[in-house]
Amino acid sequence: MNNPFSNTLENMKLSNEKVGVSTRRNVDKNWKFYHVSQRAFRRYHILTGNTAWYYHTLTESKCANYGVLIICQVIMSNHIHEILYSEDVGNISKLKAMAGNRTSTFVNRNRLANNKKSLEHLFDGRPGFVPIRNRVQLLITLKYICDNDLELRMIGEKAPYSSFENWNGGDAKDRGANEVATLYGLNLSELYNLLGKEKKEVHEFAKQFKTKEYAEMDQKLFRK
Image (tube, rainbow, N blue to C red; front, side):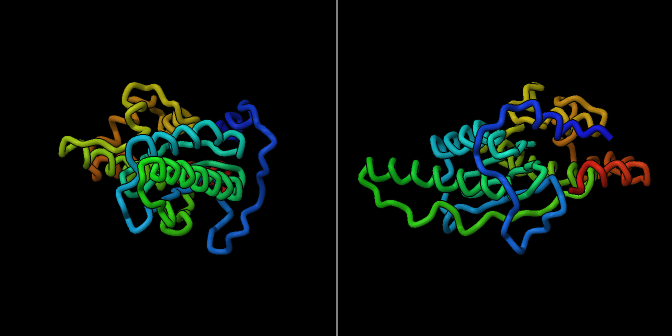
């Protein structure tokens, strides 16, 4: 089976950034897609404005160097949700470490410039990694992350950054998003509209992919 995600990575120019095997023992390393989440230090609302934009533009510009595709990314004011793809989870770990360190430096420089005390940490520990094993789980995870964004919109607010704002117009800046839509026979705008529906409707749509045929395809696509 042709893997569109691997092909996209191959077509992106890679630099000499070091990528490789993760040394984390608590992460299942047998998969290619991961739901990665991380909380801000003490759940402070510090991932806003320029901080959110810096983190987003940094990861977007550097992800290919680390052999990672950003499927989606939602930055809330005190936590981050991402779905990331890589041939090795070690690549994702290295991207996250780099982004965390550089964003922390960015935040503290700005705080010191404004006569504020620097933060001890930007995040509460390491990010959490949940492997995504098939397209049904991928869709349900997308719905969960999208709901973080939609809940804010319902009260007239918005996340500091959300991939789904681009998806709404069919213009994904995150590499890999269009490929995800094709897994469900949809274009990006159609996938966005599906994610905006009630949870039970999304689950009902997902049932068509719970077949032996899709399970065999997903083993090749999702498993390392």
